[in-house]
Image (cartoon, rainbow, N blue to C red; front, side):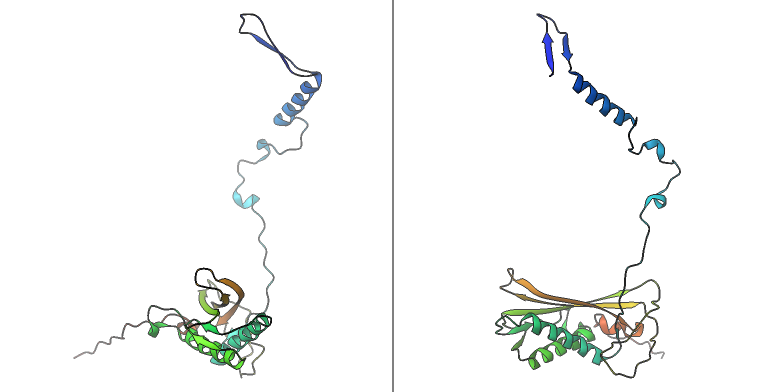
Length: 229
């Protein structure tokens, strides 16, 4: 057994002698490479007219849950209250000196969306009522930041539902909407550049399409009206 090379004196011809076992291994590898006796798929089995649609995975719908509808400022308050309750649970075993609630970011204070302005105020109110010391863009060993993103779908949504925790006189089946917003709140601890996020909560909500300007940055360009002389 083994692999040997014999070289003659002053000769460039070399001969290799293989053992019987190595020859059998090579023969098996050659058969598999050629598709003889192997179950591996061959290029010849793929139809030339096959397209990507023939081989891609079948699409399926994801499992969904009821999605709340934001249709009033009281709903905004309820979202802030739920965030404050979850924050209180997350901070139950921590010592909190103060929570710095960052103001909404925008190109100018007058351009901050109405929702972010109100949600910011609601958050500070709920945290203060929960017993925390709250600062607004000041000093605090914890920093709270909120972000809002609105998305317009390409087709009307057929399943909508109002918030279950409210008793407002709302229609049982609101007008189908193509607009959704995400509200994300994060709490971090540590110095700038080295802080660590210890709490994060995100929610997705439907909004009435006519309310979309309340969630978008306001425009400072004054309205111009043409008056015929």
